Length: 201
Image 1 (cartoon, one colour):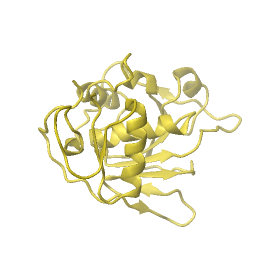
Image 2 (tube, rainbow, N blue to C red; image 1 turned 45 degrees about the horizontal axis):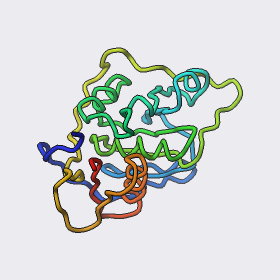
Image 3 (cartoon, rainbow, N blue to C red; image 1 turned 135 degrees about the vertical axis):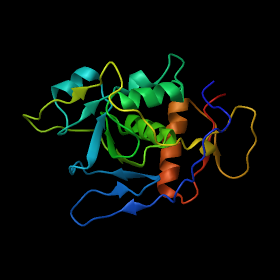
């Protein structure tokens, strides 16, 4: 089962955008931001969730390739969070970085952004349009077969609901798991009080 009773606690900060003139909007710590900008700085880690071949052919500078398909099981639900956090470590994430998620489809980027946020990633920005790469762009780097870094950020597990658990307030619990994650990401980006998410039926 994907959603477990809470074992790690972390207060989820307000969903705020950090706006810098002439630079892309990034999430404040503990939030998700949607942006249409691909300008990045040295502190931003790019996670390209397109297929490996497309990512390794051309991507943004310094991008790491982590296909969205690797993060979901055959039934369409995300793999368990232990595996997710291991996979994030295999592209060098500890959870304490600023991350920009890019994809061929903005919905894929939003779903993976939500998973990163729930896993504990400190700052998550999502490219809100399909990624386009300029001619001559270098390719991204594939993930390692082992962890490069241990993902240590505390999970935001208080936002997850187990299947039988009841909750007051906004709850996202209808539709396929990917659609739930996409709606959850939008809710976190637009609301100071994030909804709670149920991924299990």
